Amino acid sequence: NTPTVKTFVSVNGVNGGEGAVPYCQPSLLSSSSDDEMTSSSLEFSMCDLLMEQASRAAYTEYAQGHSFQANYWRDPRPVEFPTYQKMCQLAAWNNEGVNGVNQTLKDNFAKTEQFVWVLATKDGMIWPKEGEQWGAPDPNDPFQSILPREETDWYTKDLFGLRTAEEAGKNVYESFDGDHLQFSMDDFDRWIKTYFA
Image (cartoon, rainbow, N blue to C red):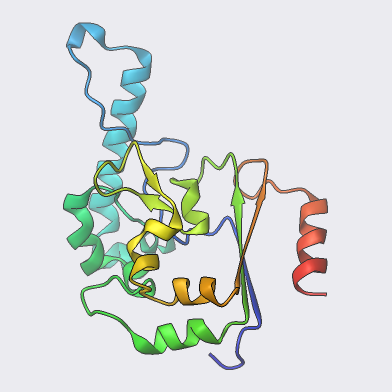
């Protein structure tokens, strides 16, 4: 961490992980009967199938070593959490991995003077979009409830220093009305002038 980062700006970052194929939110809702299959339920079924295949592909040594997208895959199903902890690079970065807390990572995170977390309010690329500001699917109901950052394990347990940064006033939260990285130049100029000028 040399030189030390003064200000870190994350614009629609995959901070909390990617839990779905882009623009295809999984539901794992079951239809009550085959007769009631609709185009909507078929969409849910297809998204669920794609999520399952993405998990199988992402949680391999090959994918983790060769695909940055796989490094951010975070299957929201509780049954997949041990695999995420063991296989995913994001788990190591967020101090959720099987090797426990990396104190050096936590110490280096604390050296940064300011973090700016920017959310796209209509982001369809990242699911859940709230992960851009450290929200996460609720393990008790991952496809219907998103926890605010203050209720996530990485915040409550201060796994890598997010809560410490929050309490020190280092975290700033911004948003723009739009899809993934579809911010205006006015937004961009404002971020540069506010956080770097």
